[in-house]
Image (cartoon, one colour):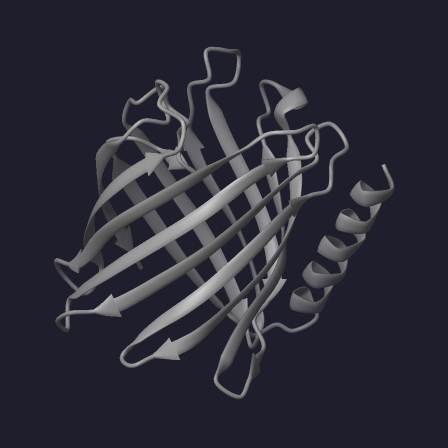
Length: 217
């Protein structure tokens, strides 16, 4: 409960900071993917998903919401995420400090809150980065760490790689990785082709190639 209250207070403070100014920018996105994969695990029983979100930015502050259909073989058939944070820069380092809330309105027992800390650094024309997430809910008590690299190969194409480890306080962990490329078809529409795999050779976590088309405006 204490961790939840800390996360709730942090989210409220960030949202209040953003709401304090009338200025800011909204952006929108919608996507269709052949499989919604989150940290190496299919969230749709290896079936397609329709996803979309709204983001608000104001200086270093950001907030947003995002939704997708899911299939865990339970009552939950959609996910609704809320998030907020700040993205300060120190020299060449770009930071992302935020709070994320994963909601499953049809199955509240799955709801979870995470704190996020990430950093990126220029690598030639690309970037190298790391991120760490810790769950604030005693029921889950998990953490996830990741390193990632992204590099443009043309004006419209970017290749990227990520490797992460999901850990559970009760014991156990697994590794997951993905490699792929994003191609800008127009100034608003992009296509991402990505290979996913994990250290667990079970259904929903085994290797696969996922195609995602996304419109952002």
